[in-house]
Length: 190
Image (cartoon, rainbow, N blue to C red):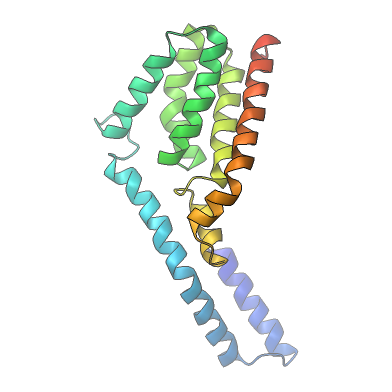
């Protein structure tokens, strides 16, 4: 935010130097731009609110989010290791809806997924690959992604319209990610 603010000031100064825009016109343009971003900022706050309603991302306190995480991880442990690796991808993709922050998701899930991978004879590299693919590829679809909602707000596109357009591509990406998870397991990716 600070970088964009500084860039805005620099652009206003350059526009003033070349007599393309006065300081008042630059201030009004800034105000209008901020007004257009306000709905996107409110949606981002709402997306963060979902995490808070589910109990936050603190692993040490009981919460709905931690219960969901525990039972999801437990259910993966009873299947063959290559299916468990794919299940980790599926879990990370679904969990990304609740915690769209990559660092937050890593802090919450990786302390459970890494030991689970060890128990299931799945290398930590595959666990990390499942995390990266599950976190990254679904960000173009989930309505709790701050960057997606912000971008959709800027271009004034409703999420349901976007979802109707992008769901096939997201499904194709998930299929491709699944192939890479299976390939990584069968070539013993370390």
